Structures are given as C-alpha cells and as structure tokens.
Image 1 (cartoon, rainbow, N blue to C red):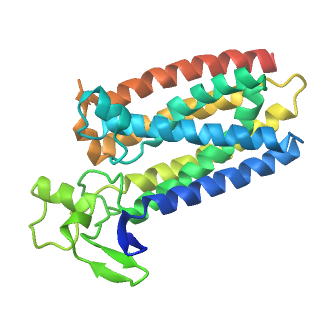
Image 2 (image 1 turned 120 degrees about the vertical axis):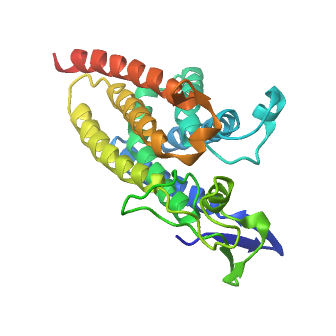
Length: 286
C-alpha cells in the first residue's frame, strides 16, 4: 500500500481517488473500443454512449455512497453531497438504466452496445479496486487470517514524496482501528484487516474472463441475444459484492436484520438477473 496526497497548484487534494478512477476509466474505454472496432460500430455513437454511461454511473455511484456508506441525512444531502466518495455498486445499478433511456431516445441497439462494454466495465472495476487497495479505501474488518493487511496511518504527498502527518489525511483503516479500540493513538498502522479490495479484484478478473468468453460465444450465434451478457454481468457482480460485503468494515454503517441494506438490494438484483439470464439463454441455445 502506498497512499498519496496530490499537491496540485499549491493545494493538497486528498487521497488519490481521482487518479485511480481515471486509470480505471481509461482501461475500460480502451478495451471497449477494441471490441467496438471488431463489430464495426459507428465511432461517434459509441463514444457518446460511453460518455452517457460514465456520467450516469458517477451520478449513481455518488447516490449509493450517500445512501449506504455515509452519514448524509435528508434528501438534499443524499442528492447533492459530492464529498463522501463513490460506490461502484450504485454505478452498476443506476448507470445501465439511464443509459437505456438514452439509447431508446437515440434509437440505438442498447443490448448490443451494453454487451460490448460489459467486459470493459468489469476490467475497469478490477483496476479501480487495485487503486482502492493502494489507497486503503473500502478495507475489511479486523481479522487474524495470515493474509491480513495493516494499512499505514498517513500517506505521502506528491510530488515531494514527504510523509504528510496531518490528522485530516489519516487513513480510513487507521481511524476504523482507533474507533474500535484495536490500536492505540500512537500507532502508525491500522490493525490487521481483511484486504476486501483484493478479494473483489480477483473476483472481478474471474468474472471478466467468463464474460469475455460468453460475449465471444454469443456474437458467433445467428440472431444473437445480446442481453445475455449484461444480465450475466449484473448478476455476477451482485453476487460478488454480496459475499464481499460480509468482510467490509463500512458495512457496519447500515444494518438491516442480519445483513446490510446494500446486501438486501443485491439479493433482489441477483435473483432478477439470474431469472432474465436463464430466460434469454434458453431462447438463444434451445
């Protein structure tokens, strides 16, 4: 782990969330264009689709972050507060819906375009989770497993590469450890915690490989039912996130029965996606 704070134009901009987000987006767009070229799609239409998907994903990510992972109260804070971070789950749920409305308006083949970007999206998510791990965001609960990770209390300022010992920039993992009495206030590292970011990273890469194989299988079929790929993506990611939520420390912010509110949503998303996937899969291969 190497958390950093960007000092740009004389002002420190906090942890480098924007940096790894930009890298993840660049990877996703690059891979999506590679697939789009293979299908000889209109470049301008595809670029506009990506921009709409990105903007709607950011809106959904911010909305879910405020609803499930922050202390935002009241409808105004939930809708307008942009200081609490970004939830990829919100992007996965809200982004496709708003993009669908845009494609209907532009009379584009939504399902084919969605199928084209799905492998790229999950690949970008994997890159983003690596950034989360480097930064210490989305860490897990305290654990004694051999692969547990201790995150540093402070990060380094770039470009000076000097340790920035400022309480405003203490890592989330360290603050979690202090809040739960797991380390003392002089500790320079957090308590050992689950590397939940890496769990999701590896799961995302497995899902990427499966989706890419499914995409190639579908496009080789006559009268391809492209919606099979998006349904597999949404259901697969919902299952991944549902399971990983059990290890995440920020899950404690929003409990509903024995599971978090997010997990209840993910259950219904998973069930609905599996139903739609099986229905379309049967039509394609029977």
